[in-house]
Image 1 (spheres, one colour):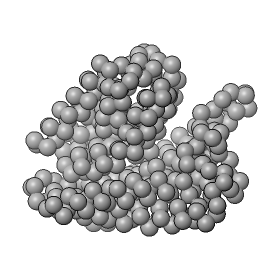
Image 2 (image 1 turned 90 degrees about the vertical axis):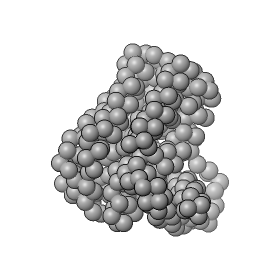
Image 3 (image 1 turned 135 degrees about the vertical axis):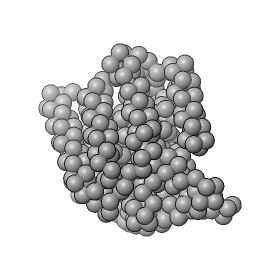
Amino acid sequence: MIAAWLLSGLGLLILLLAGDALVKGAVNLSLRIGIPALIVSLTIVAFGTSAPELLISIKAVLDDVPGIALGNVVGSNTANVLLVLGVPALLATMHTSECNTRKSYNHMISATLLFIALAYRGVFDWIAALALLAALGAMLFDAASDALAHQKDGAACAGSEEDDLEGVDPDMPTWRIGLFLILGMIGLPLGAGLLVDNATIIAKEFGVSDTVIGLTLVAIGTSLPELATTVMAALRRQADVALGNVIGSNMFNLLAIIGVASLVGPIHVDPEFLQFDLWVMLGASLLLVPFVYLKQNLTRLWGIVLTVLYATYLFVVLAG
């Protein structure tokens, strides 16, 4: 069992490092060959940072442990709101009242409702995959259109300048770009394999379902990059980055990860998801309404509330 825990941790570490390497390599290669920074930020960076979750979900589908695939996404979305925003708020107040994230938040809620509706079919198959990916395409097109319109109006568009893209290095040599890409493409499937295989062993040893492991161990692990980004954004008083990171990550988790994984093979929905976890995910998402619509700041008190809610959710999941 100690080996399983250690290998799970190693798999997670490899995933995080490989995902970061892939993003750095892909971003610098794309800008080197002339792809606009705006397009890079909306596509390559977004997909690259979701690569660990995507590889885990695909591996889980191939290994016939769909609970890890769905638990990873549903658990990550819940953790992103309650944990990833809660912990940084304990460190510093985030002035979310100054952010205008209504449109992207509406997209996230729409994606959440679509996901829940498709889950009630009992399986995410190719039909559900096409619906999710079509919604993703529509939302990306809308985001790109808005960003281009703001640029034409002369407004500053967050994320549209090369300097705002994480991992950009104009002086990075070509061999290093290639090395990052190779490490990312090798490390992601390797890390996903280690994490899924050993998480399954842990689940069997403790007599819990793969769904519970997906909702807890795997979900928290794959939310660590978002947590790190949001903590730094809070300390730098960049509330828009913190809130936008969570909203964007949640939307991609639902539409892109399950959308692609469902094309690999059908993902059957455990009844527990329909009765509890999906509604917790939706409820957590709705907790963002005061910060998006009512101009509330994410204070330390809110940080305590969100963190306690997440701890309670973990207790209920593990106790069940």
